[in-house]
Length: 590
Ligand SMILES: CC(=O)N[C@@H](CC(=O)O)C(=O)NC[C@H](CC1(C(=O)N[C@@H](Cc2ccc(O)cc2)C(=O)O)CCCC1)C(=O)O
Ligand SMILES: [Zn+2]
Image (tube, rainbow, N blue to C red):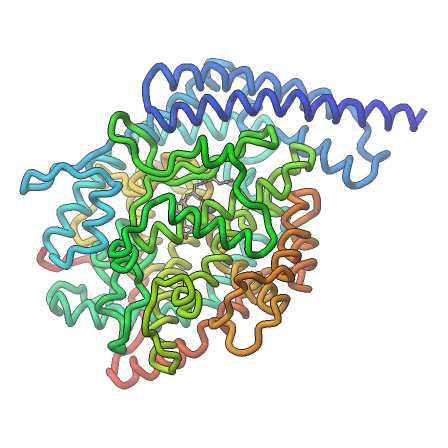
């Protein structure tokens, strides 16, 4: 009777897949309609149907949990356990489930609709206005005004909602036997000492980050004056070219040490009249050159790649899998900048992953772990951004291949990828502790800044209090998108880059590798990405790199020439590295 139990389980799984595709398709369409046209009407449709989805999930979970897992092979066991393992759908009380969806959508709507009125009358949204101001302004006071007002109209407006959200999310998740939402999110990595491993990776990169921080702080002092910088050696948070100081690549114009053609090709893209479509075609062409899947017709017909001017949309870029194996889209308020060209590749990396695992059972249509999903596009952009490749596609003219250009290039990548490491690490350090109750609403903001000061070495340029809710000024908090996936991705993407470069037959320094047109590299990616989450991620990683664990060595090798150069520069300048753990008491005069 084991065989008919096996047959029964297989029948259940086949029926589940067909039913789930239909339910998730409808849900995705609802949320797409809301994200691309924010209205109460569209929100109500999405929220109402999310209750149907929860019913479907709960029912499937209870049926799946009746099968005796011990009798089946790994693949079937894994499939059934994913169906059993509910998320917030486990919420028993339907009214609370509705409230959870509503309060999440309300926070995301506040964030997406918020605009800032500058003293000079300008009315700026986050995208494109404030993003461009933080990237291009070199006026200390103007930057401070934008930085502070954005936090007033976003985070400050959603503090109470977030407190309610935390309680509701935890109540739902605890029905699955997890202690809190953070524990549930960490369970996706199926890794025992996950937090210790993360701490170790952070420590591995910290020496490199400290040298970059010291160099950047010295250049910023030259520009804005010593009196603007606290004695604790922190960098004021609004001076790093980004609203959250998470990437510093917009400072390249005055951080670039050697006077050579800039690898920030934004001006060239604009001079060549690049369009959003052109940017998307470039990325599609790169994936095609590897022998991977090109974007299907549905993608080009249904994606939203520029900000519409007749309605409110969620501008934060995203990639969407509509769960029917055919409909895949990107929503992006694309600007003609290098930053956005990198984002296009990042989003298309998600679509590529969707396309490669689209024939898997629906519960396996996920990344090997969430960090894998975030790494795909960034691996491609590590090749695209090489001077060699940018010259090949006509975005660089006379870049020379010498030591000084090398340092300029490595610095441009480090300002994006190394600067990010402490930020990528701290977001969920804060959020896991909020979910566990260690951080209470009474200390939300104080604990946030303790982490920001300690890990990033940046400090608030003006007094912060518990009237503020600065975490809410970062999309992923109101958007409830877990963040450690990006930290994992930034380590993984260099291990993957190393592996695909070897497969492409690259020799020489890792940072000069461009896998363009390499079908060997493409085949390696295809073999592993097609697996989705059907195998534990160490198996996937081993198939690509031969290693079963994440480690920082590829990233450190990639940046080694820059690390040596930064150490010399900081010694020459007599600048000690590091900063005080605690935030500065005295805020320098604004
Ligand atoms: C339906 C849905 O939600 N789909 C998921 C994908 C999936 O899960 O299938 C999705 O599209 N999420 C959106 C999110 C958008 C971005 C982001 O938020 N990035 C981080 C960190 C970062 C920054 C620079 C960078 O180069 C790489 C990472 C930030 O901006 O802080 C915005 C810019 C780039 C990526 C994303 O694509 O990850
Ligand atoms: Zn992503």
